[in-house]
Amino acid sequence: MTTCEYRPGLEGIPVTQSSISYVDGHTGVLEYRGIRIEEIAQNSSFLETAYLLIWGGLPNQQQLQEFEHEVQYHRRLKYRIRDMMKCFPESGHPMDALQACAAALGLFHSRRELEDPAYVQNAVVRLLAKIPTMVAAFKMMRKGNDPVQPRDDLGYAANFLYMLNEREPDPLAARIFDICLILHAEHTINASTFSAMVTASTLTDPYAVIASAVGTLAGPLHGGANEEVITMLRNIGSIENVRPYVEKCIANRERIMGFGHRVYKVKDPRAAILQGLVEQLFDKVGHDASYDIALELELVVEEKLGHKGIYPNVDFYSGLVYRKLGIPTDLFTPIFAIARVAGWLAHWKEQIGKNRIFRPTQIYEGPHTQQYIPLEKRLQMWEK
Ligand code: CMC
Image 1: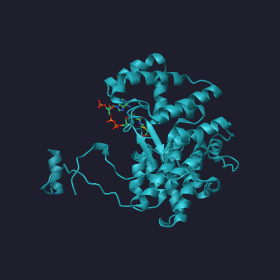
Image 2: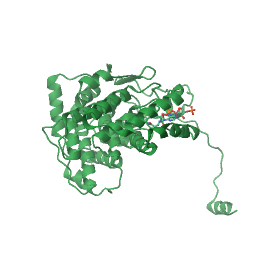
Image 3: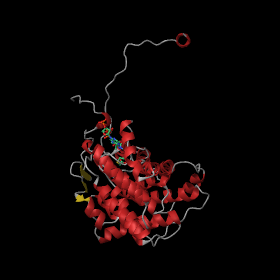
Image 4: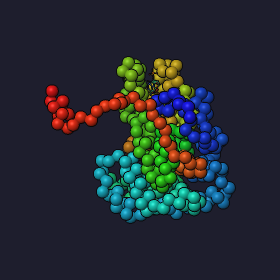
């Protein structure tokens, strides 16, 4: 085997052969199973998209109905999971709560019969069904309230918004939220998907796979950026402050949240669709001044950093949509997770279908031929 050059962050190194999604970062193209994201966002639903990603093709009417029905049937949480959540600190981050709940779900389904299509199907359905209920339940329970039970007459997105706000959402809000889920469902080999694949490659259960991916998504350089964008826009405060803010960030080598991407060197196509959704929502429920700051920020960043390929990514406009839907800021990343479960499960299934455990190598930079120093001498050494 030849030794490869070390690339920090594995930049440009293929870690799998996949047919789930495709990104062209220079022309701003994203496809799920060969279909352009714009077409899917316009015509599909999140559950249909999840089916497409996980099972490899669009379902026929009967397959879709059965899948929707199964997911709807499994939305409820066991009282033991709810009781466990009651013990979580109310100040804890919802991503940590979600990671714990996803892992706990594995306790109830601890078989690892990865060869059994029924086991795989059940795990897919349970995870897609229960993750949104977990997120909404934590939101209610951290305030000392009972979780809102799912409603069988509502679709996937509408039911989540209902469980979150205890109010049936407007159909436009539900459709916009469903599109947000579609846009976040899958994105080739990002950090959390890689995490899912590494965990999957040990042939552990899919609940552990999803729990590890949730933990990876939580960081501010990945899914956590959507929260940080809202804080940043609030701190900038006005259009006049945008230019000085960007100049200060560049001078201090600080990251501007919601910008830049390892793969995209143009505006992320999902950011463009999300921007359209923000505007649709404004027409219905009123304008948000942060949007004007965001537009100015996009212009100034393009002027100053466009030559480096720094443009808005998916996290830049998503927070503005969620805020208009009345969603608390610390639920933005859990919502990303609700959607990305589809992609993680697709990669889990692909990985176990042609598995080899991940076991990369390293370039050792430490010393050799060191001697073991007895403890007494070590103390003397430190005292000197
Ligand atoms: N603001 C200012 N400069 C930036 C930014 C940014 N957001 N992103 C990259 N750069 C600069 C960076 O300073 C470096 O400049 P130089 O070559 O002069 O040192 C150059 O661009 C390349 O940066 P990099 O760190 O090598 O890029 P990367 O591919 O390792 O990082 C990234 C990608 C997404 C982590 C990074 O762009 C970033 O930190 N962005 C802000 C956080 C963010 O919005 N994350 C969401 C990512 S998209 C969705 C998701 O994955 O969840």
